[in-house]
Length: 448
Image (cartoon, rainbow, N blue to C red; front, side):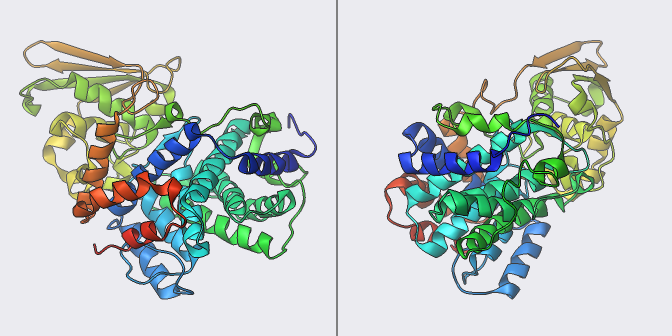
């Protein structure tokens, strides 16, 4: 295993303390606020999904001290339980923002620091800073090496990043942060076998809850193994086939930050990241006055990561979000892809099924993620082609702020709280100046 630099965990902990003390620049705080706003929209939109309902019922039954808010519950619950429920719900639609390298901090770190901040009366700026630093940790862990294929990334990186972020929020020193990381690392896991099932979203909730618990236990004095990232039998050994902890050097004072305005992808469609380009290309190639009966074939020339998602018969609407054929078919048939597109009833739509039968996937390993071509052949003999290099919403084809606000409004309307939009936007826009996050907590408990 390459790069087993002694003291990597302490290097990370020291760097987090230093960055928290020096304060984060507006170039980090502003995108943190924007990501939070988008993620809150996804939180409300996902509240009626089955895993969310189950998680919320668990939270209500668990109860605990009334500390933190969960949409759909009138009464607050304890912070760790709120983090668990909200982590599930934010990720339920696979619609939340994502980083580069792919970072799921909005579903793992944000629910943790949001719940803990509400319970401790933290300021809005403290919340945003802790979230940004948790994003930093998750991005650096992701870049450190090659994850063993048996594990789902969110379940591995999320608990450590959430633990570190919560420890920062609690103002723990370097030793305390290292303790939290050690505790959080023992909660890491998440099986790849569950990666395309509804259990996938539980990985985010479990990561968020683990982060809260780890930081609180570290604050109380619980200690795990020092150097847990790099030591023999530690986190690196368990989860990586190759790892180089030099990736953590990027946090140690060179001025670079992982969370920047151009480092966030805002999803225009509620699908897994590799499917964004599929939807884009098919929408681009879809003719005006589309008629499914006119389609002879739809050829998709795609990179290996997309070809590997071939699944012409997903067992649920949720599974359809990870299916190349299903995402392509619904984009072609409906001309748009939204939350309701993945209702289970669409699985039996005869027009969608007919298009799936006419889809051919051509794998091109040399293509990068986001690069693909859609070729539509019609009965008239006409052939229409569209190519994409970057998916909409990515750094090189970003959504504008009006487009992101439109997405937010759509999410809130789908979750039954459309009238909340203006108040929520105003609350989040002034978040870094607020003394505590109680107003945001109140909005989360708004009537559904």
